[in-house]
Image 1 (cartoon, rainbow, N blue to C red):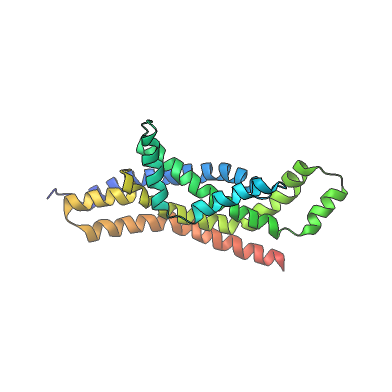
Image 2 (cartoon, helix red, strand yellow; image 1 turned 60 degrees about the vertical axis):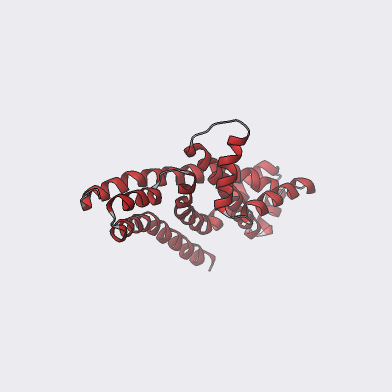
Length: 217
């Protein structure tokens, strides 16, 4: 058994938590960008484009994230491209996040009163201006609590990246636990770090939800 002090364990877990944060940010930012494309496909006037977006969303919402990680990680290798585990899990989480964010934002757009669109048309605004200046700002504000809630789930979901060898917070906790034979203390610290990452986001989401509810009265 390797002797680690509490501070040694804490320091190593905090270093590993950097990768959890970086993966969460990469997945959220990438997912937001791809999610915008999914959103516009989902609300397109052309039927077959909407069907493509619906199929994409159904695929990633209807299959386990763990399976998606396996398919992306090993699928890229099958086509003869060797990628680092970091790149593979970032791609998988980006695709996963884009499907959920695109659908969350579509719900936000549908929640915007139709009168807003009609008023924008009456003012002579073309489609791009209507979406950019009138619809999307209101839709994103409405969907902000759900978006923050999804981000919290994304942070916790990064623990699944360990299955393909990516060393983030949960995987580091497992490695340190195996070396020190102190699983209770190690995973108590891991849980505390996850809580410290997610709790402020949850509070922010709850605050935004209350603010929107008051504004709607």
